[in-house]
Image 1 (cartoon, rainbow, N blue to C red):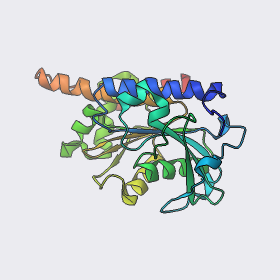
Image 2: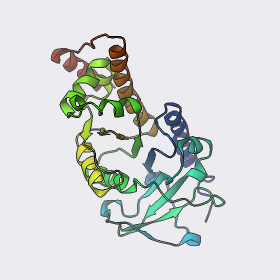
Image 3: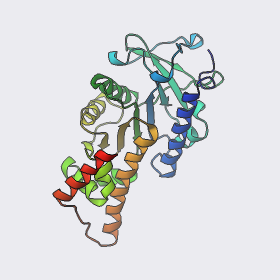
Image 4: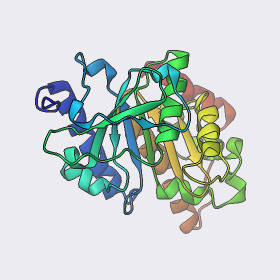
Length: 271
């Protein structure tokens, strides 16, 4: 197999961006141990067949993803730490090539001398989201999961385990949240991580939102670029942080009026 990473500048840049954002997730404290995962549809970056005859093993998927048949993805590895991904992407991420039936995949290392790792254990959720994106024909290529402390903490309050109340709070803490996340977030009640149930709930939520918050667990977000997807989570986390800062200072957080929120959301059309 040829050196995929060394011969593809666009893929090198993407792997570098993934590594940079992995470092941010670790620095924020949102990626303890091997927490968090990222996948990117890279089919548009690979003009040639990347079939690896030296690792000619089809790994079966529990369910098929026909709309992803023949697609390729750059995915963080299972059991891999974001801090290690930031330092050495080839050893902590892997390319997967979905077969022509959408029923399995081949795991291909980024470099010929790198150890092949398997993709994240949250792969069913990632592939389900990518299939939903492919089905509606939108341009998102990135799926990102992280344990943003501030957002997880909010879901320990019954008040904010309500999608309407959660969005009202996040929009009201900082103008940029309403501007850059005008659709708000979707809320997914607690379900066992890695299960088909949580994958289905997350996909349903992301039909109408770019971000889904898992109760007492973390965040799933989709976007066109890795950095921009991180930015959305970062903005939401800041809103939650402002809320907690107000409460810790014994300040009752203010709220924007409906008219003020509508005005802010109109600004989103300029970006």
